[in-house]
Picture: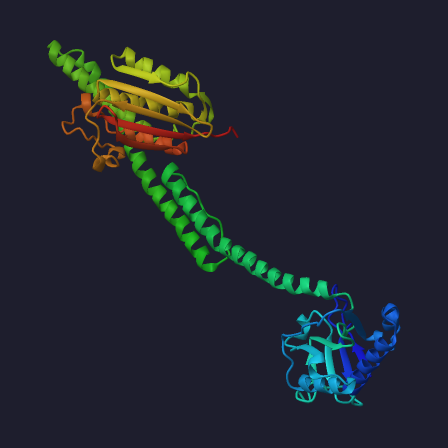
Length: 452
């Protein structure tokens, strides 16, 4: 006797494998009946006879012209005894009966019907399958083959429900789906951890470039939230510290304008022409220093709105102005190169760089290279240059590397500082290097931006 059970507790897209319970003697007798009918039927009618067998409700029968060759896995335990009993009942030699039975590790992952062979069918099946592992034979893939002729074999298997391929795909996709879920979850968690750190890095970079507050938002994790609050408090203290000192410098520089104007008037009454010229020159130098200090201390250049500027025409104009002042300046590059920037600030930055080259060198060469993503400007002079160890120091406010402190050659010490602030606020990069002629090479890279 055979019984079939299907778990239908919950509707599933791919239903679980059937559990087929065979009584051992019934199975052996059915195999003998199948063999007898196959031998008795003419070869031309054998397929039709096998289709009409009563056992076809639970078993599939296939005719082969060769040995099925079930070599692995080798049946053991009760299945070995079953093979011998089948051979004896069918009157065949042991080598004329082959049997394959796979151990049932996880019934939920089985592709084919689960087969349980019992010595006898109990009145109650509850827990019967697990009662006696030695007497009860269980397999997730049972195949029995036996010879019916010199070259013909019959293979008997539990009847297929047609869902084997679907279950095989399910068994492959479920682990892949689990792995994919773990990967996506891990990426989500990693991004959740990395995003606050990215925000902190961006805020720190903006604070160093613009000297403006860039507060970070509230984070979910308490530890990150505490870091964010501490970072925001640090920003406020730093900005207050810098603003207080810049305001002090701006106030002092502004208040110096009145006494300088008064001194200029008094200088006109100096009787000696040479002394008068020297006093006026000193007053002019002091006014230039005050003006540069006010420009650096104020946010006027950074508060300027962005607009489209023809950088090529701007550089040509600055080079012509420097040439009119007596400096040998040449420009190489396209006549036009559009850039979205702060017009007054960018003009001030490149004017400072060209003026710096004219102060320390006798010849300055300005080159512009226009690319789809950025504009690269180089300003080279033939002066003494800046040693590599002092290039970063050259950008510090009120730093003049020219040891004589002569304003005719040393300047105010704010030209490069203002230029770098403007370039960084634009999102660009400014670097100092060695020019081909042995002087200083200033390289400015400006990324293209769109008007908002």
